[in-house]
Length: 99
Image (cartoon, rainbow, N blue to C red; front, top):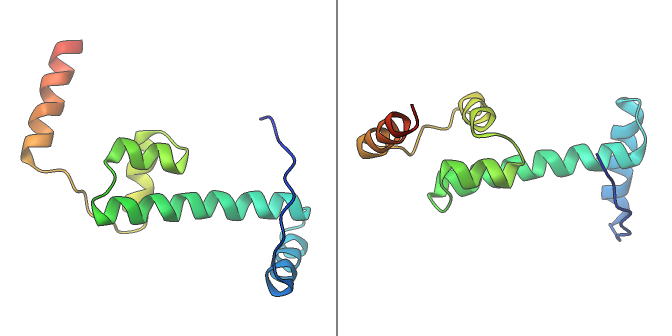
């Protein structure tokens, strides 16, 4: 994975939190920030899905994971599917067209 350097300003409490987290996880601060950003992406995506503003596919893209991974993540967070019967029928049609 390629990385880009980014410089940001955060308040001291947030910095202390990230630094403490990094120490506890035995990783550097950059890795701790990347982990928090990843969790934030997932949380943001879940909220978009729950509010109905993002489809399952868009939710997966926002979270940076595959659709199947997103389905598992949503299940782990106890989020019910937004799909209705028509969505399932459309999915079956698409599968039949491919296979």
